[in-house]
Length: 488
Image (cartoon, rainbow, N blue to C red; front, top):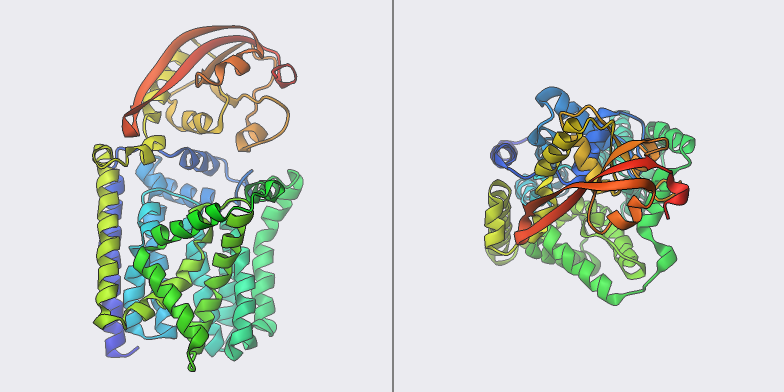
């Protein structure tokens, strides 16, 4: 590494450290409760396994590690997110440096770390965070293998590929991207069509094998859930949904970075000189984007479903923008994304700020759960209930975390015997249950309470949440549960 390269690396490292330190401080200061998915992932971390109903196990492992070190506070559950994003940014530096130069690498690392998507997800823990880290690791190893025939890079790529699959099955896109890279790059082709390419695949699949065996033992719930999310059986073929998804990508990646990536695609398609590095990055960016655009047209697609594309997209976008108006467009992009990042910090530290700018509604699912948990734990302990039960996954997950201390078991009410989530699969309420504290939203109560011989409303818990809304939850003393067969 030359002196200039080291200088750019040290600048990137210092900025990444500063931003990450700020993000950790924001987590420590934030009063926001766990999002229902975060509470569910925490519960998974308390019950380590090779798989869970809706996701592979990596998210549970990450939270287990951070909470084993720091405890079970909300910030400790979430801290893996900013730390992994920081490591991913450093990998983006390495990827961009190999394709372009260290200056582009420095800008790319900071651009990745400050994208609106990364800024938002650094305030919570989700499956995308470890996925992006392992994707970046696998891509860096793949690009090193293009120039270095030693097996170490193939082994690293295979391990990263397998661990990425244990984070989210979207890691399978990596195989498609590598295939496209082989079409356009002789160096990539040498990796893919060799023993090293086979090794990457075999190592990755071997690391996924425990999850496959877990799924087989549980009738493949994760595969079924993934298919259900795609929802091709209820195809809508909606151009409006596609337009909404594409517009969302400008918000997730940053508006000017998205312009930059599109500009680079145009240059690579039309330019007489097409650098292999740029073509390989395009191959690891375009397929996930195209696939999810198609998915958005057929059924629906969340804005984060194409997240893997942006590891390679970031250097492409930066390389395009750095040449526009003496990098002024790139600096404008940093300014816009930086304002969004700081705004998110203010919201996380002071939810009333979100209400003041009209965004409180977006964070309402992260408020009011501790108050509900305290009320439920108090009611359960005072009433000497043996079982607390909820009828929807969000309340169930939040009670497992926030309804403490408690002596009662927490169980999931179900309308039938079909597993629709991890709680129904592992913590289903079963008869005989003679006395249950049912925790229900008002809309759930009429249908749920029919499955008991008697029920008495003991209290209603009303808590303010974001957007100046309130959440009302009713607590019932429910007697003699008959079971799901008669609850419809």
